[in-house]
Length: 373
Image 1 (cartoon, one colour):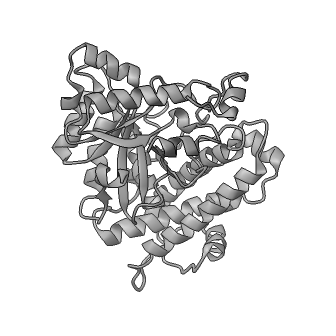
Image 2: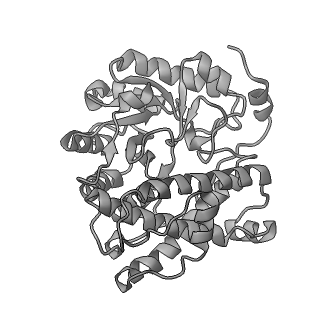
Image 3: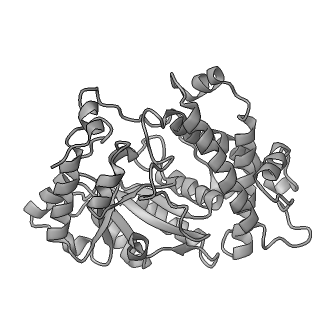
C-alpha cells in the first residue's frame, strides 16, 4: 500500500492529541422563558442565542496573542487558521440570523436588522441588555455559556495548523454539517459498539422508539469483540447507518499505520453489515494528515466531521446538561452534524428530551443514508 510522505515523517514525532477544553460550556434551558416548539418560537430563541454568541465573539475581536494564549491555555497560535475560522464563524452567524429573522413581526424581540456579517458584528457589540426582564436570567447564563463555548472554538482554531480537528475542513471531500438545509440535523454516535446489552443497545432502542435515523462510527476492535461474542451487530444497527472510526481509537496525526486501520475496519463493516454500511469515515479526535484527502477519495470514502459537539464523554457534564448544550447549539448553528458517543449513557436520555423540545418547530432530524450520498 502506498504511504504518503507526510504520514511517514509524522511517525518519527511523538503522538499529539487534542485535550478537551478546561471548561465545558453548559446552560440550563429552563432559564429561557418560552417553549421552542413552534417555528416562530424556535426562531426567536435562535436569534437570541446568535446575538449572545456574536457578542462574546465580538468581545474577543481585539485580543492579542498573549491574552488569547493565556485564556485558551495554549503556547502557540496559528494566526492564519485562527483568522480563517473566525471569519467563517461571522459569515455563518450572519446567515443564521437572517434565516431566524424571516418570521419577525412588529414588536417581536431580538429582531433588529443585520444585513451582513459586519452589520451583525455591530449589532452584537451593543447586545448588553435584554428587551424584557423575563429574559434576564437566561441572558446572564447565556453570557457565561457563550464565552466558554467561544473559547472552545477559538482554541481549536488556534491549534489547527499544528493539530487539526473538526473546526475546519482540509478539502472538498470533508463534511462538517454546514451543507445541510436550515433546521436539519444529523445524529451521529462514536466509539461503539459496547458489549451486548450495554449503552449501544440502549441508544439503538431509543432511536427506534423515537423513529430517528443516525450514523454509528464504529471501532473495528470493539466490533470484532461483539462479533466473537455472537452478539449479532447487524441486528443492533438494523435500520441505521454504520460508518467507520478506525480499528482503534488512535489519532491519525502522528501514526504511520492509519491507512491500515481505515482499511481493516471498512472491510469488517462491509463484510458483516452490508445493508448498514455507508462510505463515511470519522477520524478519531477529528485529526487526520493534511495530505490524506486524495487517499480517502481513492477509497470511495468521505471524511465525516461535525459542528455540534455534545461533550457527552466528559465527566464535567451530565445528561441534562448535554441536552441543554446541544439544543442551545442547534439554535445557534441552525443546521449540522451532532456528535454523541454510544459508549456513554447520556445520549439515550438527552436525545428524547431534545426531540420533545423541538417538536412541531420545523426541525428535521435527517436520514443517515441521504446524508451519506
